Length: 273
Image (cartoon, rainbow, N blue to C red):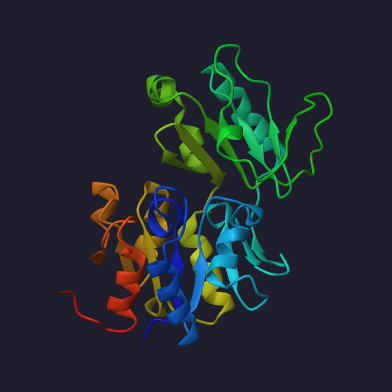
């Protein structure tokens, strides 16, 4: 029996206009009212998902969110940290050096701000265009605090530029960190072992659940780890073909209440028409 549903946001719970449909909202509420825990699982910080928690009615102390692609599990209402894993400033500096050599801009995401390393002259970072829920600040390269905790670093640049140099990123980056391409124009780099699968696993431990009691819903490459981990894995019709290979079930698209239909199918055992 499913006791926890972890749901990705973009391309999954959210429509293309970044809103939650009434069909999805109502079905999530129905699941919660029937004793199922529902958690958003996203690369965003908690501050960036507050309006969605309000829409779902999960902005309470007894509900959790998995943020920073699994790096931080928090109570929704209080922001109390239930689980977190971060990288060091030394790690971020190592990554900055290699990305700078490839003219890739790097930005570091902390719990309360995004810090921008000096950008390549012809390729400024574009993360601020999509992440507008945290303040952006410039790193003072001469006075870096070695104790600063970083949840992830982000490369957000022109798609063509990223494609042209991505194969030149050294192997040690992929060996020492978790690297995922969350959008055609964006790489996210997290501490080793941290991904959405780890985040969902941590939350399941907190709730004293087994993986067989967990259902996850996603669509993109950064959802793969949780899709592989969970007992029930659902991928959206609009999901990437290579991601669909790991689905137990393909639901409808994010524009057609795919989340609601998956919950109805697995939690309330409604059959497809």
